[in-house]
Image (cartoon, rainbow, N blue to C red; front, top):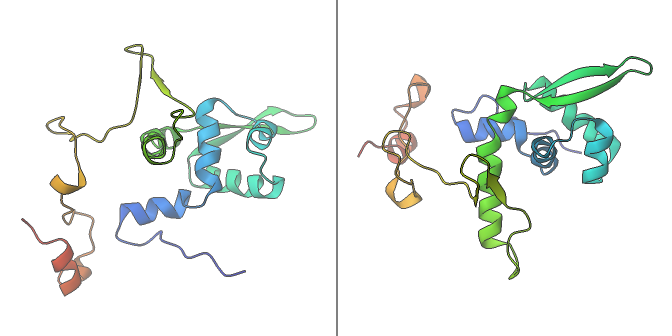
Length: 167
């Protein structure tokens, strides 16, 4: 088995995020946490995931700060896994993935799950909007620019200048 490539130090928030949640099982474990699963057997039963794989994903999510491991029984020791603030902040990502899947992969009968917004009482979907003006953001009206955290040593490279040239 080959070693996993780490993206933790790449100057890209997408790559760094994938370093934490970028395998097939991790988003599904997080999905189940959002659905209310807290205990190992609940995750395992809902996902039908191998116990060793689930153990590894839960450990990684705890180490990354997305889940908190909390003892709920001492004899024998048993733990539950709770979403942290950092973990809850991934909800829009999972909601966007669900919306894409509903649009492009759902059958003619429609989406398998809907997201119900309790505040307004309606079903809805994820939408990316500008944090300044509130208008939807789409790929054709949005450009990526260098942010303050981009490494100075890379800013003058021709490929970087070409990809992130100011408009």
